[in-house]
Image (cartoon, rainbow, N blue to C red):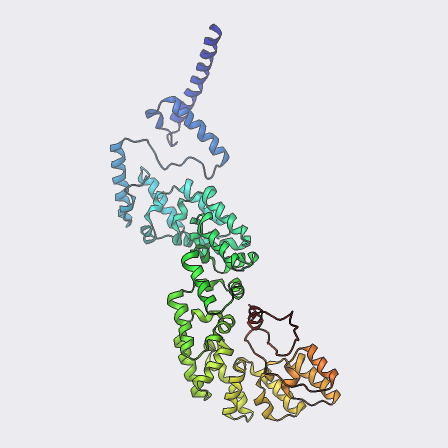
Length: 506
C-alpha cells in the first residue's frame, strides 16, 4: 500500500511539472494560438491539446500545422458579436454572407481577410466568391493548401488552379486522402495516362465529386458489355470524360438501342465510340432523332442509314437540315445534280454535307477545263462523290498519264471516274506497264478494280473476265472491291463483318 502511494505521488509530481511547463510556455508567447486557452481550460486539457498538436505538426508541418483561424474560445454572446463584425467586413467587400449563417467561421476579421486575400491571389474575384460563398468556410491551411497542393501534383499547373476552383469550388471541401486520391486511382485504373489526369480533370472537374461505385463504374461496365475494348476506355475518358457521369438507364442505353434499331450492329457502335466517345454527348431526342428524320426526308434510303452513320458519325450532331438544304441547292445550281442524285451522293460520301463549296468547285472546274461536258461531270460526281474532295494537283498528274501514256479517250474517264482516286505511282503505273508488256488491252475498271492477287490471277489467265460493278468508295477508308476475294460457303462473311469492312477506318 505504501509503495503504491509513493508511485502515485511520483507520477503526480512529474505530471504537474510537465503541466506547469506547458502552460507557462504558452503564456510567454502572446501570438501563439493557444496563448489565451489556459484562461478558460483546465491545465490537463491544455497539456493534452499541446501534446497532440506537437505530434501532428511534426508529421505534416505544411498542412497540419495549427491554424490561427479560430482565436479565443468564446461564449455564445461573444460568438454572435464576432459573427456580426465578420459579416459587416464581408459586406464591405461586396460579399453577400447570407449563405454563411449556419457555417462555422473565423472569430476575427484578420483571419477572414486572410482567406479572402488568398482566394483573390488565386485569381478569384468577389463575384466568383459570391457565386459560391461557402468557400469562405474553408481554412487556408487545413483545407485550401492541401487541396491545391494535390491538384498541382497530379498535373494542374499553378496558373490554372484559379480557373479550376472557379469551375468546381466544391473541391475545397474535399479530403485529399478520402475523396480525391481514390478518384485519381480509379482513372489510372481505366488506363488514363498519368500525364493526362490533369487534362481530364480540367475538362470535367466534377469527377472529383463522384462515388466510385456509382455512375462511373456502371457506365464503364455497360460500354464494355456492348463490345468496347477495355483498353480503349482510357483514351475515351481522355477525349470525352463526361460519359463517366452519364446514367446508363437514361442516357447511354437509349442512345445505343436507338442506333441498333436503325441497323447498326453493336460491334460497329463499339468501334465508333472507341474513337469518338463524344458521340455519347449528342442529345437523343433533340439532335439525333431529328437528324435521322432529316436524312430520310432528303431522300437517303433507310437501308443506307447504317452505312451513312458509320462512315460519318458526326452527322448525328450537326445542324443537319441547314447544311443539307444549302448543299442540295449548291449541287443543283452549280453541277445540275437533281435532289435524287444529291441523295445518292450523300449515301456514298456523307462528309459532303460539311465540305466547303470552294473545295468542291476546284475539282469540278478542273474536269470542266479538260473539255468534259457539265452533264458528264455531274454523272461522274454522282458515281464517285470522292472526286469533289480530291487535290487538283494529284488529279492533274493522273490525267496527264491517262492522256499522254495510256492514250485513252475521255469517255473512259466519264465511265470510270474512280480512276482519279487510285494512287498513280503504286497502282496505275505498275499495272499499266504489266498489261502493256503482255499486250493486253482492257478497261480501267478491269485493270484497277481488284486486289493485287486477283490482278496477278487475271494476267496469268490471259483473259478478260466479266467485269463486276465498280467499287464502293467510302471516304477515309479502304475500298470495297467486288470480286477481290473468293469466299467458300464456310467462309462467308456475316452482315456485321460486311458492314464493318465497308465503313471508314475508325
